[in-house]
Amino acid sequence: MERMERKELIRTIYLYLFSLVGLVLVVIGCVRLVDLGLKAWIFKKADQVVVYPEYPRKYIAPGESVKELTPEEEEKYKEEQLEFQTKEKEAQRERTAANSLAMIIVGTPLFLYHWRTIQRNKEQK
Image (cartoon, rainbow, N blue to C red; front, side, top):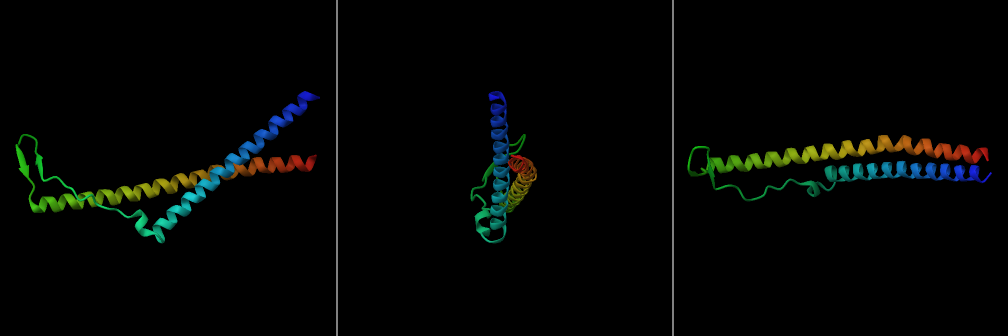
């Protein structure tokens, strides 16, 4: 008799634990999506791309000696840096969105299955 009670206790702990894990995944995923949305539409400066003001004044081309950058080359370098940082920020947003959606997609069924099992067990008792 004691063995059955022990198995039931372990099963109950398992069900509640995995319900909690699923719920935490859903909550974290939703929080990250809300954060992403707030940064994209309301607090736009929170996710702003800022170009670091330094740029190389000199560089060494393969097979050449030290060479000064022309003003056109300096401007091109600044534009390339801004473009790179903008693309990196967009990629980071997409990674955050994908990760958040994955958490929600995995966490929702995990929570619902285990929570419904807990509810069915309570109804049977």
